[in-house]
Length: 277
Ligand code: SAM
Image (cartoon, rainbow, N blue to C red; front, side):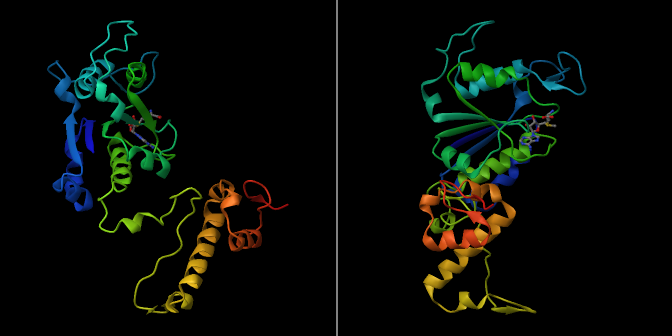
């Protein structure tokens, strides 16, 4: 997978050379290039922002500089003023997704990460200040580029760099060959069709200070261990993320799942669980 990141702080992404993502780059599984947006400016101050049209506090990232940068990275021929010419989009744009982190966009989820792990190329644009001019995503969408805007949570960061790092890590760890043991990404929180939060994990020793690992995990009965973990996942999800329980497809629940959910106060007689009256 090819990844380009545009930021006014490209050095922020030096940390991506660490750990599994560093190894994936060494192995050629992922190529990451961080670009400085200011390299596409022409004025002596290398300015990338201007005051908001219509008034208000702060500064907004200028479309011209982003336009020159993204035209080059995406291979899109610039359309003229008022132009709706879509012929400029590159042939390989089908395989490319342009992503802008934005706190006022839909939430980035594991499902998005899984979908984006199939893209050939990702181009991330990091916003700063009050954000980027809204015409930038609009313009590239109109030119046939697959443009996404995502929030990573209901809070506001100073810039898109942290958000890009979060998305990038969630996406790349799903690439075949990325994890040493591919099994480790199969049974995780938010993963799969009927996604739940994961059960609690323990390692040795069986007794640490005053706290013991649940006995059932030590008994070696795989069926019982599965049921114990599954029930714990259902209980934790019901308590912490009831919205995920409400999204479950009841047809995919087994008899024991239904019994556990009913004991937790859910009605599982319809297509999706709902709180029992
Ligand atoms: N004025 C914007 C608002 O109120 O929605 C906030 C702009 S924020 C200070 C600057 C940049 O940080 C954004 O353009 C975006 O790239 C990034 N950012 C901040 N919070 C984010 C979040 N929760 N998710 C994704 N990106 C975020």
